Length: 187
Image (cartoon, rainbow, N blue to C red; front, side):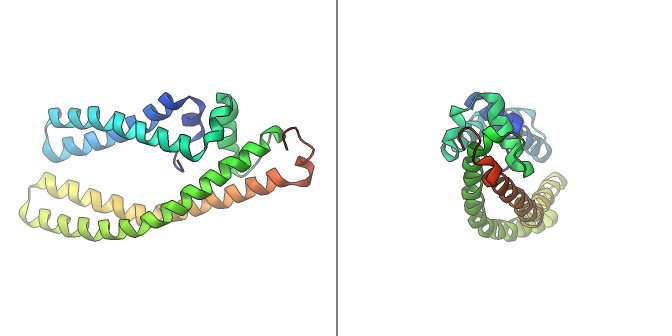
């Protein structure tokens, strides 16, 4: 949910599922293709992972921010963009910005727990990359080291990115709660 930009929210659950599912399906399908060299395996991964991941993400997004379903698509996307940028350009969206900000906050808190799991994944992926380098094929080693790079990026880059986003979310909350917003419709 934290990664989902405004355009993903603009559509309904099907568009959210496609937006998240296609990205995961293509990414992991390419991983399989590079590692195995088998187009059939890559297509199977794409065809299985795209709907499974897409539906999971769309359902999670709907559960975390159920009020988003009550907004028309353009307003829903505007709320997401405003909250993520730290501003509230449209006063009538202020209550929805507050609700979406709370959903992001809950998601970010859950994400911090996942961080410890990623440390374990980093240790295991590093060990596997070392093994694949000495005992595996060049393709296996390439993919294993690519996984190590992605895990390290997740451990180093993502927390800083998340914290910057949450600082902007706090700014959007402050703007939504500003005294001049109290007289706004719905506020």
